[in-house]
Image 1 (tube, rainbow, N blue to C red):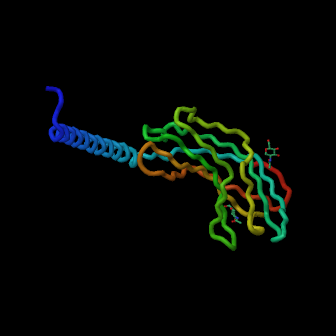
Image 2 (image 1 turned 90 degrees about the vertical axis):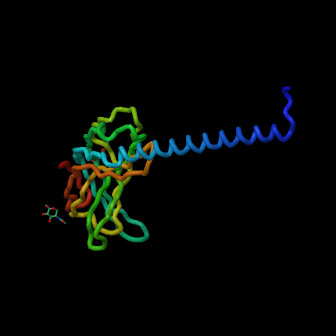
Image 3 (image 1 turned 45 degrees about the vertical axis):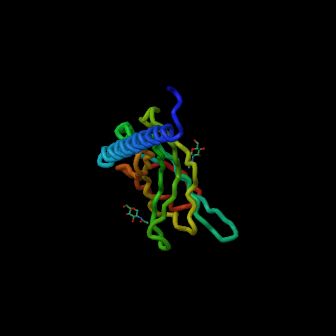
Length: 188
Ligand SMILES: *[C@@H]1O[C@H](CO)[C@@H](O)[C@H](O)[C@H]1NC(C)=O
Ligand SMILES: *[C@@H]1O[C@H](CO)[C@@H](O)[C@H](O)[C@H]1NC(C)=O
């Protein structure tokens, strides 16, 4: 007899469904646990890698608009870093950025991103960037750049396969004195 009567058929269906549901629940639990283990295995091993930053040119100008005079700096730079140690198996990509930090009378900490780059897993992790022009200019809200010291540092956000987004500052930053005069171009 191949035909089941209605009640028996529904019963069979129900038990199939409940078996499928518990299998699904089990699979989801296992996946969640594995994901959590991946996350745990990587959270404690975020290496700080050394970075070498050089400055190949600085210009400082006055930028004028209706709000007044602003210092406008442009910094050419070179970066050498090997990010190989950062790419463990839970790292999908890195979002790298170079920041300039300086203090003024108005603000204890001014932070400006000069350049950024996305580094995908599987590409060459050894960066040797020579004489780069900044993507973004250094614009102060006043005259806070002239004669000031600016600290350049490289940081990265880790975009992981599982877990949270990390913000890692690299070890090694570079402090540079900005020109004492406007329209001055030099190396240091
Ligand atoms: C930065 O590099 C660009 C391209 O090489 C060059 O045109 C510019 O003059 C440089 N700027 C400074 C401040 O050295
Ligand atoms: C910049 O740094 C130099 C060397 O550390 C220091 O002598 C000077 O006072 C600093 N200038 C400013 C404006 O902070």
